[in-house]
Length: 424
Ligand SMILES: [Zn+2]
Image (cartoon, rainbow, N blue to C red; front, side):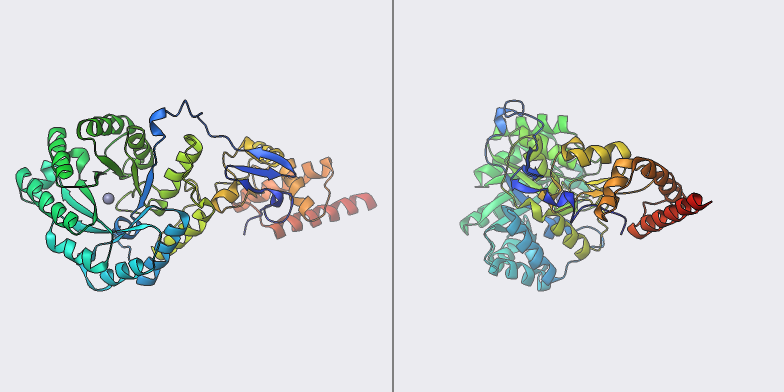
């Protein structure tokens, strides 16, 4: 492991005091949201619900397969963290998939458990078999999908959706009607579809940016218009092809959507979905909307999902990457040591991470002195300067930060030289 200060020493006194705040050496530290209540827009005061589809859309990622035991464990973690609804899988796939969904239903979680279905009554019968309380009924609404994938017509799409929706409502299921490829759907047809869904009893409409082509501005306009026209609850289901899934999800919420569809670490087809941890933390810190999630479990959940999915968890992943609270640059490390708020807007403990002061090419004397203080070694300024030169040279040679033992070795070497100089 590269050198890190975190546990143990000074930084360990840095713990969560209450949500959004921390203590450091007895000093009370509050982390600020970026906007005040007024600035964030009064229209985002209603209850926002988080729908996680790691087990459905996440598993749909090319090459990802979860074992049933992994699915159950992920569902339990999502529930413990605070997710409102878990899209657990696709019952009509039968076999193992159906068993996994049943196991999740039988786990007696607090969250609503949703099964994913095509707009086909037989699919919904499989969902009923699993005992889920909610269903997603999905059908494409864009002409490109209707003509080239479904080889159908707009009329038949509405008819199939209504029949499936009415069947599900007859069986007391909560229904999300999914407009697949909504972002490329003729807006007027989307309105017709949404109105028909509402009339058929749908509880909400899932707006799917299936190919990830929206930006926050177009999203805001489209969703605002849709909600004003149809007056139905809307869920944002945004893909990340242009890196805007989280931003688009927030734009939709700002426009009046009430549900955010997400996956852990954004796991999903191609570039993935909006990430659970990004949406929840952005709501909390950028908009001051605290959904009361157990966010300190985010890192653990991210690690588990990436392990189960056999997908790397990049060090630079927003919110949960190992680099989020690692400081190497002299100016940054010095600032973070004096007051973490200089370079951090959330406390590491709040997402299950720890602060790390990394000693390497960009380190300064303050970080070096803090590092050696952990070993009970007080470095004089002139020694810190001399040692830093060697640290930098070695880090450049190795093209990485240094391990503790390498630092100790450099220090011993330096002391030896000083002794020899003194003798000669
Ligand atoms: Zn999707």
